[in-house]
Length: 113
Image (cartoon, rainbow, N blue to C red):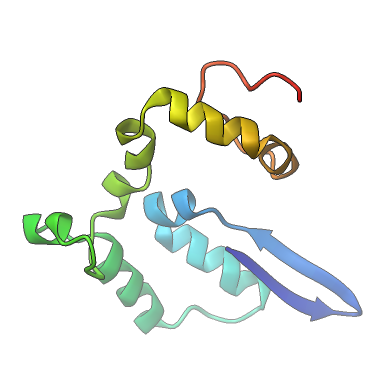
């Protein structure tokens, strides 16, 4: 997620990854609201807590539901997809991964193309 605002003719932004929102939603939300110099409404914090920290097993099994334990699911794709598939994605997306300074899942970063 990228938050942007205009300030004296210059774009400002905060890079907040999905994984950051899942593992530490309060800090991520506060960073976004700090950027626009606004207090975080309690309803926003409550919404994120309710939708990212579900504890019921039905929430985990409901693939189309709005509630889930985000900490558990944020990185699940890395465990469930075959390693060669993840590495193929990383090779295809190497430019973007490098540009965004993201970490590679494969043991070694993909060879240059």
